[in-house]
Length: 199
Image 1 (cartoon, rainbow, N blue to C red):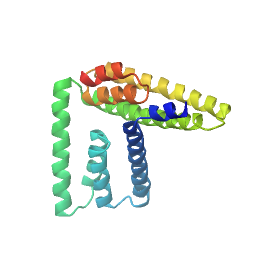
Image 2: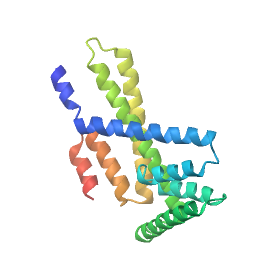
Image 3: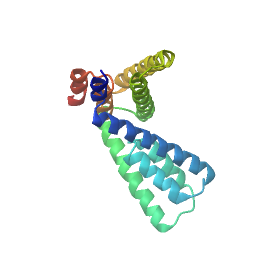
């Protein structure tokens, strides 16, 4: 039984969970550091790159760049900010044209997408905790019940965020991929997950 349960936890899933944890931790570290050093332009530029490249959050990255643009900058900082703002704005305009979303819908979509990311990360951590507790020689049934309740709550939150995303834009590649990976790696519904990823 123990061997079967251990094999149920895929290596890719473990890597994915750890990666999500690291990304979330780095995000929190950036936020805390920016509270202490709000005028550090280099730090804020670095944070905007992190938002853009690692979290795929173009809207928040653009907001950070716009905040820096209000300050007194060196010439090289001005160039970097101008270049990346242009890249993000062009990309968002192209996506808006393809998807038919206005600026308000794009902002709403990004907000729900970020919520979905957070809920998926929380769900994956809870599942890992559940399996870890189950592998103990004497599992704590009260703790298992509590974790199970939290897993159900996370699943409900994910379904709600997904429903809202689909209403705004049913064909967004990023959200389809995220939800598909959630179904495959956490819910173990490979057929449904692959259908979403292949759309």
